[in-house]
Length: 462
Image: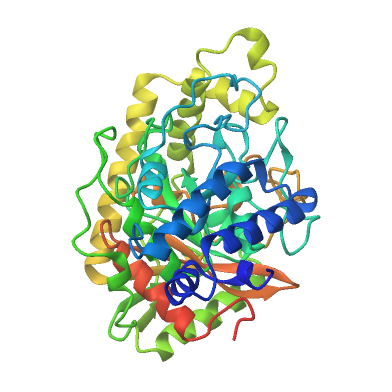
């Protein structure tokens, strides 16, 4: 049973096809694994065992008849508790959300997976309304790192990352408004992709506006491509969604990186202090890209730190999320969230539009940058996972989570595809490498990440 929880989604489907095992056996193993890890890492707010087994039984019968619903039929998946999942409360990490709602609708990405026969194991933890880069809340407690439970799993999709890392389902749906799939992926040692904005439809629309993306969190890039093939389909409820991708993402994995023009920016032009161990691990992985035939140049994008503009958009979004709450409900919010809501509430429309101007200019500059370079490579984060339950590393001097995530949130502003690939360990803790491409070139990000996996660049740093 434990061996089944270590398999990728692609390998599970291959096993179903060959009759080596079935969705029921796999789902039972995944549920058992989820129950085992929950007391220590706290990855789930809710397990859906009965529903999962019912869906697995139906999938097993389809595989027996040879009329399966596609390459994810019977594969266990988890859903971050920001996204609607029919039949289960979506509390968004907040005690201000009433669990006695109707809960009769799926988010677009969840709906596409339901149509394709995926098995929903449960809802994963998030900080309140996904507001910060670590995962803890008064509703569900602290989510901990699979490699060291005294450390944070990152956030805001921390439960999703911990679940994938520990074998409680090979696939997870996360959301990313400033790094929220890439941060926990880097800390937990898995793969995650923030797609081009609109590539994966989102409904209800996020109060954080067009900063918010839905993305896959998986064991490797090949599984992420399979998941993208399912969820990157238009949905009429998202007015800003993109048309279908030109071809399946799983077909874009081949070809390697030979001939690609890669810009390596180890510190965004000296703007970021990167832990020396992290810097060394990332540099070794970049050298492997060069060894695989990419043209690598150490250079920096024209990227003055846009944190103030990001804060304006983010804090205003937080204020909007909580606008309808009464005084008593506001007192129940995470103190940090309450603080940024107050700041966001003081912003004017002109402040917001000035931040939009910064964003548009940043997008223009990154567009020009990618006229020259196919990919930008950076560390995903400048540090490894720090103490659980803290918003910032102790002694860092940072006030907000954006202080230690300078490589991630700029690409929410620009709406570009960006992924975190696990490339090694420092003192037993994972390090992520970030791959960024021009808007709509998600295929390039997945292709380069897959090349690193194929070359054996893993957590061991080999």
